Image (cartoon, rainbow, N blue to C red; front, top):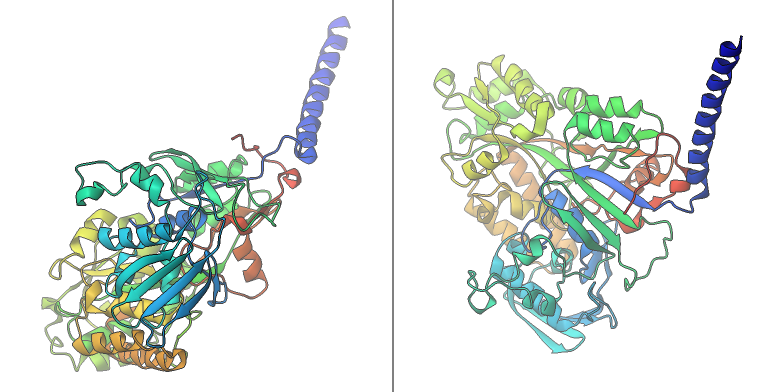
Length: 558
């Protein structure tokens, strides 16, 4: 009897202890007194902290938080003053004078001046990496007229130059120069600070780099002295970028309450599984990311326009979307629908095997198709979704006698292969606009100057296309420039250098009980997010309410 009472007492005691512990945990979460506003998110690795080095999606997200630009893009595609509070443009469109805001501080406390603007632009052009290609063909000279006035002179007019400036991130000249390594490739500039900037920042943006552990994670921290202030009092104080995209790892972190936002590379299956977790929702929004099959226009059999069109008519875009990229929307041409200068009147290539065969019969390769197989290569890191695009095209093309070989290629190998014409296969890749006009995608995707890069696997090398793109970009009048963009898009669609697939729906799992994810909020209201890369993770606009978190939740500890 005594033993029975003891066991009963012990069981009740344990239950009381567990209940008290749970209530205490909920109380701590509810009180918010010891909770830190933070976003933990996953993404691919590596990111680049140096804004003159790379232009990939992850690095773009980091730059927009760490650095500032002269001009800031609005969500609707328009532009607004940022570091430059005003500017003057000469009548011939060659000279731009920017009046800078005074009192802007870098993260180390130095004041931002015109010398920093000059240094950042010269450095980007000298390095010739990242977004340097946007500036190198056009910039003739840049100089500081006084402490807060910078002048940029162009070799020839560039109609969308203000939009291009959304990719010029301003570095602290003195800080970079104090950390150059001698013996580099840039003469007296040594390595131009490249080694130091791998793990440090020299920015003035809303967040500063607090910590980085290579191959694992980096942490951003709110910059208290940010020049534009912190009207959003619920913005995350810390952002932890975790270098992981493996589905099981990401799902485990989310299930433990150790993750607020996933990367956009998760499989549909994993997103569905995470959506079943408590307090987890999956976003579906558009950010200007287009999926293409880039066809090598100089390599048989895709060097023939009729063969390319035949292949385009073999693609069932909706089937691909439904099976591998749910929520995405088909596109008819080479420009994302939400960007300025998009031609909405393009005639699409729809799934039609009769039209495919009719085009094929006009090709010089008809009747000897067995001699000319087409290799379509998705990136190995893209997972089954990318591979499924190639496999579905393969299945339909076989119905009209076209042999398609599907060969996955590691990203590093693909970059190397796309550097030369003869080694470039047809590739499945996603691209986005670098600034807020159609001219960006037209120049980067189809101008001869981008051949040999992952921007263009088509090797179009068409002198007429080069000429009309250059002409459009040098047109100062916006209305006239857009009309030229429309005509270029029609010409490119007629040439069919690529298979235009769809605008990818950006799908990310996030904790909707205590995180306000701006892209998802806009999408829920029927709108679209920024049509250029880098701004879907502008964390100054996020809101975090850790006190509202439901279980499971593991508070972030800085």
